[in-house]
Length: 113
Length: 113
Image 1 (cartoon, rainbow over the protein chains, first blue to last red):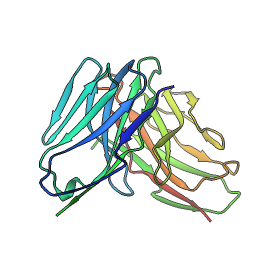
Image 2 (image 1 turned 90 degrees about the vertical axis):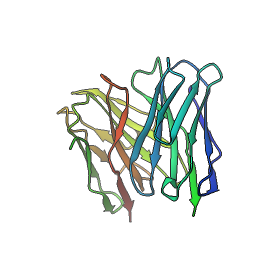
Image 3 (image 1 turned 180 degrees about the vertical axis):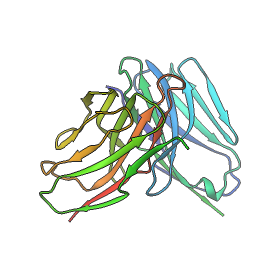
């Protein structure tokens, strides 16, 4: 059974700092990995999707990397802003699960002005 | 604008009552999902449907029912058999053809009084 772990559970940083969020998964046979952002009381917004054949994806100040062999992904946020404060979740789709995704519990990020 | 619409946003229910949460998408996606989110926990899969007139149980299907009579619609009924229904419910659809990206609605918060 695929398990997804996100560390740390919560993170507080001053504005302007570069930071890294971690996601690890137990089964390396994944189809893709997706990073999401969730604001309080809202749905999830997709940030980046990395296919299993890719090593990284970038969007603006965000960069996500994927190392299938070690079962790890990182989300790098450059020059953090208070508006980045949210919960960040990663999810993996296993090759054999069809369309089912497994989610981590998320990292709650607070960026202080 | 394409997207997923969930309604109602907030719902209060007395014990013993069934309630139905609506989920409509105009993204032309075949696959749709219902997740439950509890405070401090990740998303847990209730039911999913990969095509019209077909659906499968997720990890926590007991006390819930769904239907998929139209591609655009995937309503979730929370029955009186669900022992702890107070939660945040999220509907999603998957772009399986193009990107493999998962899109979410804004969620419905159910409170049992």
